[in-house]
Image (tube, rainbow, N blue to C red; front, side, top):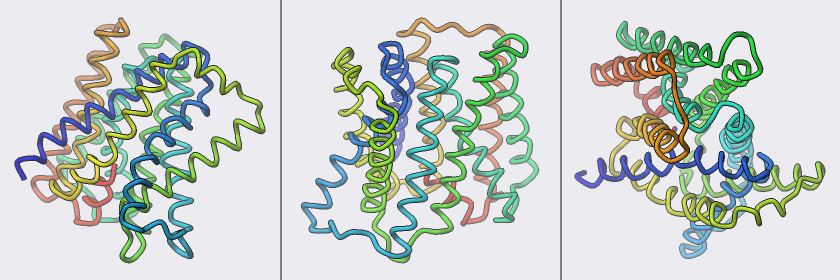
Length: 300
């Protein structure tokens, strides 16, 4: 169990790097679907290598096949596409903060589906987190294109939340989490590859940022094995904190490395999100979430 907190910081920090790397790729002209393909391809490599070593490469069938298609489509196709499309318009720091909303959105969706509502503290957490996100969006200045992209960025944590709840409700009987993740990422690879071919997107743009591309592939490869180890050692409640660590690391890199600046109002919004997160964590500790809701949040 002593390893679990270390893994939480490790995996969360690496996850937060996705937004800054994505911004660098977008600045070099790499289309969003191309970069999303790089992320899922990098994640698939170690997962399928592990499955091959354990002779577990059987094709998914029936409910499992339906599961990997829907889980991959929601979490790795739709959510990542929103992330990398919005990045050039709102910045890596802003998208990093959106990761912190994923557990909050998951809690809201679980409550709407009557998977036992959160307590009063949890409801305050939801309200504060959403208010903070809207406040950050308003810092983009009036009803402008930047503000609209900022509001559209809220779709990413919403999609992650939908994926969390779906994976909890539809998890196949006896499903191997590594196999499910590998095939879900492969679904994303197939979708993005098809989109790239149909739309004629320039894959060659990756040659403009070879170091960034290599770093992203390596990052994806070393993140997911540790993610599943964290899930096994720390359990769903600890794993649910992943989005918060990712948000902190993403903002830190955006401010210190990419020279992104946040105005006073944006920092107030970030503070409201942090406060909302704290309320939600306290609600979890007090038993405000049912076991099913915890599993949903834990698979962020």
